[in-house]
Amino acid sequence: MRRRELLAGLPAVGLSAVAGCTVGGEPPEPDDLTLSAPAFEDGRIPERFTCDGEGVSPPLVVEGVPDGPESLAIVGEWLRSYGSATIWLLWNLPAAGRLELPAAIPNGPSVKSVEGARQGTNDEGFVGYRSPCHETPGRNEYRFNVYALESPLSIEGGADRDVFDEALEGKVRSSTTLSAVYERF
Image 1 (cartoon, rainbow, N blue to C red):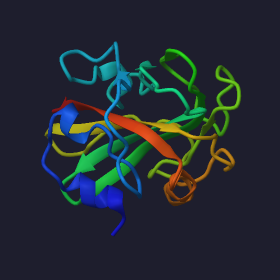
Image 2 (cartoon, rainbow, N blue to C red):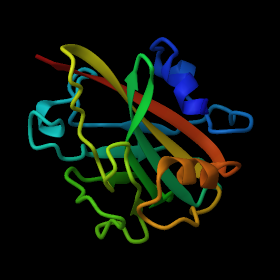
Image 3 (cartoon, rainbow, N blue to C red):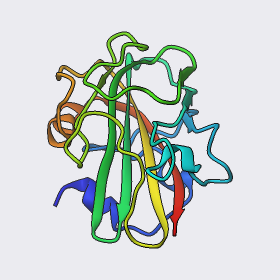
């Protein structure tokens, strides 16, 4: 079982408890890295960013990147009771200063608005953001992870989660998580 599936089965915890979580290796020391979604309301994903709305990617802000990392990567996941599903893979984002990703990044292997940035294949089989769209009534949790990397990932846009995780191994210098919920029906 992959590490991400193990983590998905854990109960929801506060940001401080999961900050610094990495794929492989020892977690980095806590730092000031933060990930926020200005459009989210009280930890809830607005309908615009789901299949019940426009289904576009949310705006995200990364701040407090420590000295040293050269690149950022973001992973979006749907936390299901039987394992997580990847809804977004985004990498080779700039690590210098504050990063503000706009809403509605077009799907496709490269991100024209951010030079060098790439998107991967989500668990629905297409490249880019897969909006929250769980089929059961009630509240489901979604998680966005940001990783500060020692160097950009040497993988092509469109890579799947296994290729992404392998490329990420050993490059993470800092990470943090933002959790939000979406309630349907």
